[in-house]
Image (cartoon, rainbow, N blue to C red; front, side):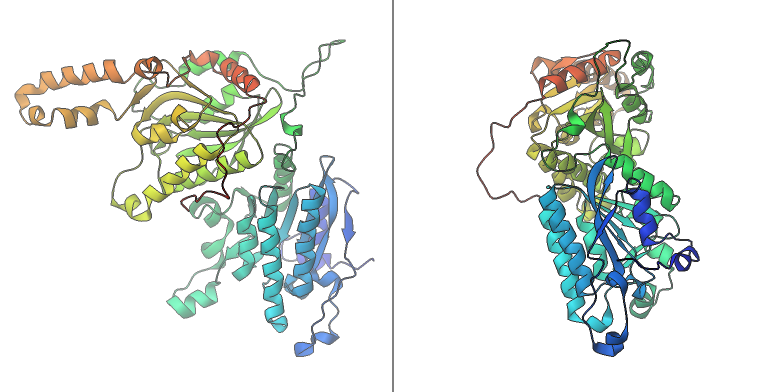
Length: 508
């Protein structure tokens, strides 16, 4: 069926129309719409006289980078994109078919919420979608784009998906809008300050990617789909794209060899000084291949995807350039979620460790740092994918264990020569061990001597290597070589210690 799309109405709001969004995401002329003839069955409040084309949501299948995807896009020009029973059924059935057809689902959310005249039928539509979101989890990737309002129960479908994209000035996502907040809490707040793109990218951690405009958003969605498997068991992202050197052909991936030698100079002379861990990541993975996720949230950690010799890997790293790389509640959630996604789709994990510990103090304790930190321990211990860890500098206390140590199942753990693997730093350790001596200023020289002894004895990778906790102490410039060899050895890794159970109980 063909319809006269109301493009101008959306353009007047600075937004693209539902069909334009689909055509920008999918390869040219690849989209095939289904259920365009669906109509609502509501007769309440004069609804029987209203003609709502495709019941306000365009659904179908297309291709992205030549690979099939399921996609739906809510049309705000049709009854405000409101969700009724048929609207919800269309989306739920699309997800169910995508599970069957083994392809990702992309949802473009732009809706005023539940269709009030349909009452409980509208809630039924949401419930159907949520159920299929959960069925699809770990089977096919699910991507949500917030391209307009997304309020009330509607937020929970994106909340159940793997990745959420937001767009500046047009994304709005909240449980209750400003009017309800004012009625209940007597607080004046704008939609942007309550649930705009920046709020969910920087503060709540709900969004994974924030974009300047819609076109940038859809380009990033296409890029993400080029990194991740399109279904559980999809081996395409892990197959080498290197071509044999016949008739002068070159490999598809590119790596500038001189970058390896630059790694030595990344670490500052003072161990207390921060640096950006991305400088390490980008010198180890293929050129220009690191695709970061949640870049504005919990900056003390960095997560994302990258390529090594053209193959996809997941990256997790502490970032000493922000809060010294310490682990807090937000950082723990960010790491655990990324690790679990990678494990669900068999994406190998490369971990860079420079962590002084879990953050101390009442604020984080009251937020539940114990519970949040336990998520990291659980996620890494549960993950059966190839896991390679590189300790660049600090690895202290419980955070050393949590950041994919050998004790949590890392397959290979490498340490740079300046790595400091200890219960705590020299200052803290001597402060506890020689607390009495430190009270007397006359013992200052003795205390400094003990600090030096502690550093020389404990703050090196030597003891950990002697006890088989470190696979090898390596020079920074050899990092890529060791990581590549490790992943090659782990290519057909199988888990040998799986215990028969329904599922574990991650400390949510």
